[in-house]
Length: 306
Image (cartoon, rainbow, N blue to C red; front, side, top):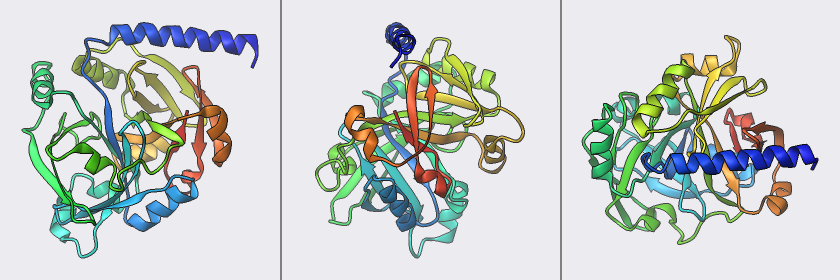
């Protein structure tokens, strides 16, 4: 590592610490889970397994449309793999807010946060001029018969958890939802670090996030390989990504799927030891932090780690 690289990293750490102080008044954006959607649940599990990340079956949802598996991490966050359940009700599938994502094997689809007080967060967002739905009960039965019960509220007018994260609160113990086997499925990653959200208008999207969550001005950069202008609200997991040009894969995704998560970044538990264990297809530096992309891109996903 060169002295210049050390200087750049130190500068970014200082900027991050200052930003954290500035965002103390912003809403809590603690990631509960992020969602990857597709047609075939077993195929998605196989893709993750090939990348070195095991996922366990979590059971069907009570909506008669979807089933899920999950890869969970020590900090409590997890990757939710969601697909159409066998013998699903076609009407329920068509009405599902992630139907387009599942039918098109879109991969990254949504994300959820767990505020300390869901009711208070709903009121705060509404006071900021953001549309929020009335919290609704939902749940599923795990394969071992344990019944899970929670409530969610959608934030914004877009499909659930796409532009803004949706809110979730458990009525049954949360560990039962995050850890079906009683422990994380992997210890190599500590949790989900960042959610990269594809947007059409970067400036307008930045303004919406700042107004909703009281965030400071983000830092920006370009990544030509990723094909995007990037904006990061330091101290939060949010990265906004707008296409560099009409030829960017992001342009095609926005036209087909719409705005919403297009990539997720995990956080290595021990970067010095764990990074060598994973097959990396490409690397980049985002906002002073080195990131690596896993071979899930063969399935059309952008999943990486930092």
